[in-house]
Image (cartoon, rainbow, N blue to C red; front, side, top):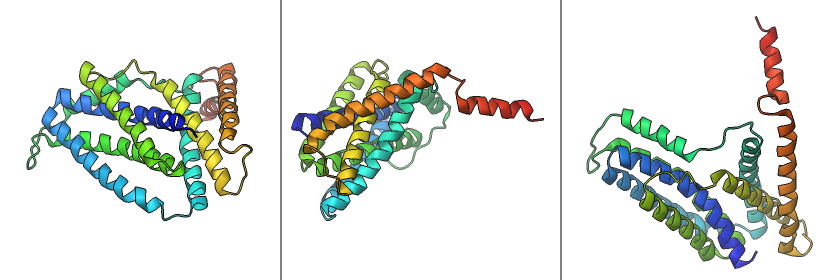
Length: 259
């Protein structure tokens, strides 16, 4: 994989996670208290720094073949999950992810929660909400950075892609102070799902002893093949129409015969 492809792949994948974390931070900060919200985000970043500092060097102790097999399998699982949701959304079987709606949901929950001070934290709810959101999304970012960086032998470059994604999303969020609803997140998730699935197949295959033709260039065939497969699934599901798929019809039939 070229340096540009590595940075771009990590950037897009991490941008998706950064948008979701930013939505939670903005909801907590605008409705509760910015100081406690930022304290929670800072605490989560500190925990993530320790995780990455520990996890990164430890991965080098695993044999490269075993590492690629394990990481490839994990990426394949994550990629197929993202791709499945993207296909269901594109075909109308699952509602499109609406960052504005998610923001309103978090705002409503924050407004309904009780206020409470704990130690140096003025609003414990805002702190906890921000901490959990940043930590959970950040762990996914850390996983992407460590796996791609170590497998390509360029952890600093993968880190650069993640940092650029976080900086860009953070700056946009600071400017508009609203959810990045215009970001084509569903399209990004579809692309990331394809990329993770392709790399998962490639690395798991290498770990299992597969000798790919032309080495990394095999990805140029894997990625279009996965895109065509996913597009075919979308077209097939659209033929049935939302709510008329085999699983839905089976459930309706059960309901009709149930007393």
